[in-house]
Length: 71
Image 1 (tube, one colour):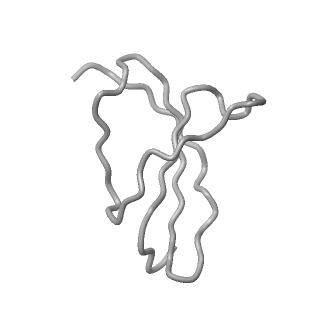
Image 2 (cartoon, rainbow, N blue to C red):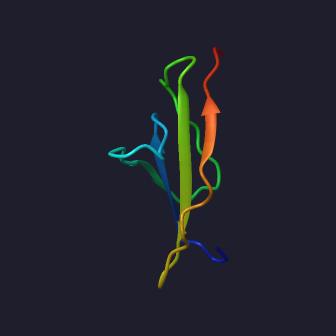
């Protein structure tokens, strides 16, 4: 979204298409990059993001799946 004031990131560890699974808000930031620490190694995480402006907000992005690895 053009002129976004902030971004909301949500995460879930189970397949979000399964019934009864809810997203958790993990960050509200003004930055376009974010670093997460203390995640479980070998765990899959599903993420989605939306932009928030002064008068509106975007829909959530497509869901992305990532797996953490050892540093």
